[in-house]
Length: 114
Image 1 (cartoon, rainbow, N blue to C red):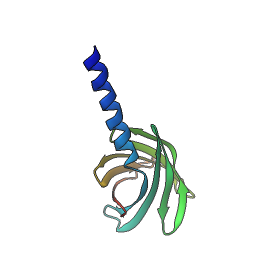
Image 2: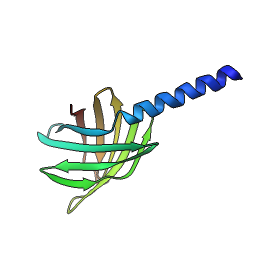
Image 3: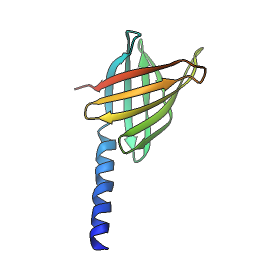
Image 4: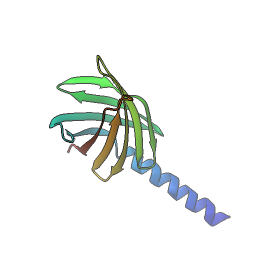
């Protein structure tokens, strides 16, 4: 039982370490669209907050969540609707997919700014 508690504690610390690695600015492009995109993320436990930035316009993300190396959040863009994002953190890169609920989907790859 003692070893199980130690293992669970270590796994919990690892999950918090992965989540904290997301803090900061990430930039890249929307695959196939040639459009640059940035995100500013902040992790607080399993909650993800921050901003989606395109052409200098910042839009707050909503319903942000972190589960280990997985993230999800929504962004509502004026005149374009709400886009649901899901991604996987891998070191200094995040690969995401987005879906606006009407069939418009795509992929975004961003890297952590240094």
